[in-house]
Image (cartoon, rainbow, N blue to C red; front, side, top):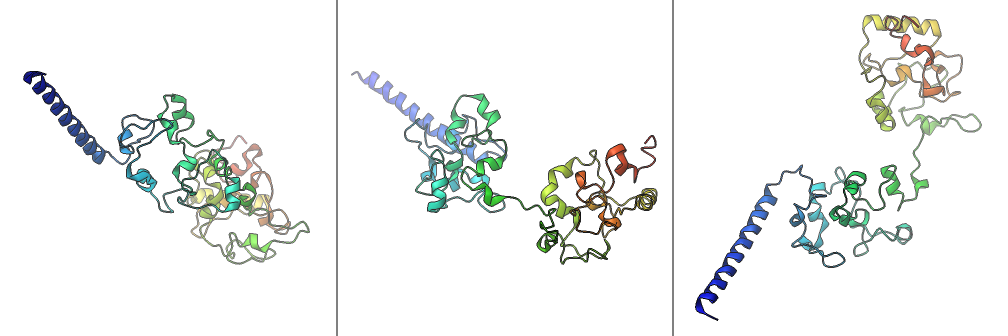
Length: 304
């Protein structure tokens, strides 16, 4: 081999090495400068964020940080307030028998890849990005809890309905009262102002009905202090229909202003506070002909 040819080959190798080093430095610099809101998933631009080199299907994944998902998935946080499910949990024998075969454990522990199929985001198939944004195993699901019940017994997570407040024999279930009340009121004599609640009425309702609250009613904010005209209309309606339209402790309209949260039979039927119990939507006045709206807004619904 001639000297000139050898020199040329060495020169090419040197240039190639320098370019590789510079490319790596640029990649590292880019990685450090990435904004926190950048979505690394479903993109071939950020493979180097998690992989030392291009992984092989069915082979070595070349994961960084020795495959430590607390580092690989660090953008999602690992505190109770930021992460939906604990990791590095060793499931019991009972739980292990329920976990599907396609939900893999890593070293007998639940990790991110137990529920997330990382490889889905690497496939060139746009439908995954639309139908399965979080590359969940077995997705798409009707709801997020459907995924949870692949491993958890749904019967053990049935939501408590605090509105079912009577036994089959008609006795009041005191524990249901304490879901909202500090102590059980005397249903025969207590007025709305006398009952002791565990917190703000809206917060109590939003624990279960938050979605409904966002666009209800008619996409308007009703949780405000009523004007003198509205307040007068409410008082007239209370007398006319034998109901109550209670305000909260601050004098603002609240959820129970229009809705009666009690089951029929808890409060004696002859009391105004019993009206609306167990009715459709638990409304203190019927929705037919917008009665519940007219109770406050007579001027807006004059045709009714």
